[in-house]
Every structure is written in C-alpha cells, then in structure tokens.
Length: 157
Image (cartoon, rainbow, N blue to C red):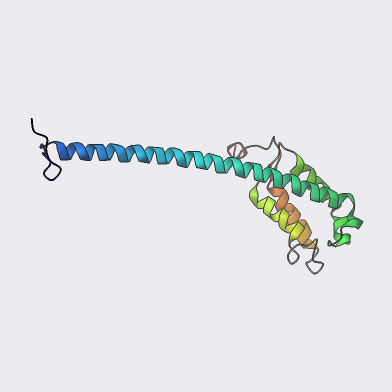
C-alpha cells in the first residue's frame, strides 16, 4: 500500500464533508466554551459589584452617621442644614448600614454626590435652595428598600 505524498494527497469523495463537519463541531464546541466563560465572567462581575456596593453602602452609612451625630463638627458642610436634616440623615445612615436592606445604585450615587459634590450638594453649597436637601433625601430614600419590601410583582396586586 502506498502512502500519499504531501504534494498530492489522496482524497475520497466524503473527505470535504467530513472536514466541514469536524470544523462545524469544533466551532460549536468553541462557542459553547465561550458562552460558559461569558457566563462565568458575568457571575464574577456580579459578585464583585455586590461586594463593592456593600462596602460603599457601609462607608456612606458611616459618613452620614458621623455627620448626623455631631452637626457642629461638620467642617465643609453647611452646619445649619446638617443640623436641620440630622434626623433624616441618621435614619438614612441606619437604613444604609443594615445588611438586609437593598439599595439601588442610583440612590448610592445620589448619596455620594450629596456628601462630595461641592456644586450641587445642598449640604455643601449654601447657595443651593433649602428645598433641595429635602428632595435629594427623598430621592435617595426612594431607592432604599428594607428586607420586607414587596417585590415588583407583589406591588401590582
């Protein structure tokens, strides 16, 4: 029996179809593996985001609690406004510090801006109207849900 040379390979009629089938199976296997990797990456990122959000919630809760505990020591903040809104700040700090509470990312962002943005924060900028702290705190509080908060499908009933 002769061995085909590399310059002129011997082909049978089914070789092209077999090669295509192998390529197709290999491609499907690679896609399945890629989807598995994508699923793992999504799960990993979701877990990392959950950890980061939990840490951010605790940090914001500590900042709000210290601000509400001693409004006169609030260095860059408008002390009068901090004193006026101390009960709401304390309540918000307690809710953020509760590990069973679910906090929407938009509320975390609004809370962070309340504590850090010198232009739009009603606690940092005395030129912002006094109505803005109330609306900002209500907007933040609307995204903070206690553990027994009904899910979306239960609220519609």
